[in-house]
Length: 470
Image 1 (cartoon, rainbow, N blue to C red):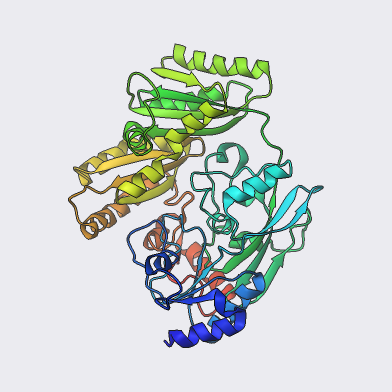
Image 2: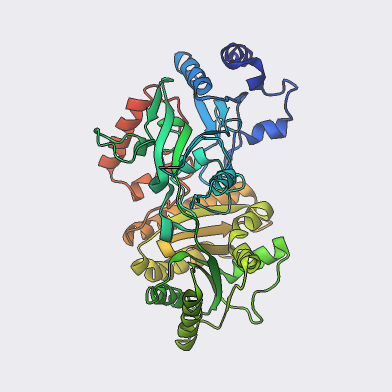
C-alpha cells in the first residue's frame, strides 16, 4: 500500500493537519504507536497512518475513502481496554476520536447531554455536575477513557449494582457504518416505538459495526450524600453473606466491591497508602451507600454492628467525610494501575451468577494453583453484580512470550468452568482480539452466525476493526 498517497488523499478530504504518517517528523514514534494499541501487551501496533477527525462528517469521509479503497480502519479512543480491541496490527488506518471532545447540546427538561464520542468520561461527569445533574457510570479509567469507547464496550464500572450498565443511559447515538453512511438515532425523546432500535446493536459492538461519533446520554440527580464502609473479611464465603445482609436494610447500595490481600499489597506499594487496619486479612470489601439524613447514618452503624456480631468480619470502618471516602476507594480503584504499570498481566474479566460464585471459585482456585505454580493471582471485582477481575501476574524472570503461551493453554479450561457455572467469559472488557477464539463458550453457534450476518449488513467489506470479536 502507498501510505504516502493515503496520507495525501485523506489530507485533501479532512485537512492536512489532521493526518499524520509514521516518521513524517510530526509526532514522536512512541506516541504515534500508542494510538494503535491499548493496555494489553500481546500484540504490538503496526500501522502507518493516523487521523484526527473533528466532526462526524470527517469520520464519514475517512471511512468512505477506506471503503472505496479497501483499507481497514481501527477506531481509537482512550485506549484503556484490556481485550486488544483497539490494536492496529495489520497496517490499518487508525482513527483517533480524541479531538472530538465537545458538548453538542444540553436539554435541561429531558435531562440529557449530547456530546462527541471523544470526550473523556471524567469530563462528561464534570459537564453534568456543572449543570446540576449526575452521570452515574464510573470506573477507575474515567480520567482517560472516552465516552465513545465506554459505549462501544458497554462499560459497567463500580456502580452497576445500583445504576446498571452504560446501555441503560444512552438515548441517542450518531454512528458511521462500514460504508461511510451516517446513522442518527434520535436521542431527544423518551418514546420512539418505530421498529428495531438499532442503536443497541452498536452498544458493546467494539467498533466492528460502526464508529460512534456522538452520543446523547441520560442524566440523573446526584446522590444526596455518600458513605463508604471498608471491611476486613477472613473468608470468601463471608463476602456473599455480607452482600445478603445489606438487603436487610432500607439503604441504597451504590457499590459493593472486593479485593484480596495481594491486590491491597500492590496498591500500598504503588500509591504509598497505609494499611487500612492494624491486622491483615485475606479479603477486603468496600461498600458505598447513599445517605440522606441522620436515620440513614444510624443504619450504616447498624449494618456494621450486624455483620460484626455474626463474625463475618475481623475489622471495619465507616468513612466520616468525603476525604476518607476517597482514601477507601483508592484501595480498590488503584489495583489495575498498580498491576499494569509494574507487571505484565494476563487479565480475565468474567461474570457469574452470585449463587454459583463460591462453587466456581473453589474449582477455579484448584485449577489455577495446579496450572500456574509460582504465579500470583490478583482477584478483585464488582461482586455486587457478579463481575470478577481475575489477573494472572507474570513472574519477573519469565519471558513475555512464554507467559502468554502458558495463559493461552489454561484459558480454555477456565472458560469451561465458567460455562459450567452459567457465566460469561467477558463481563465488561469485551472480546477484542484476545478472546475471539473463545466466544463459543458464551455464545451458541447460531448466535455467532447471526452476529456475522449483522456485521455483514453494516460493514459489507469487513473494514471496521477487523479481527475483533468475530
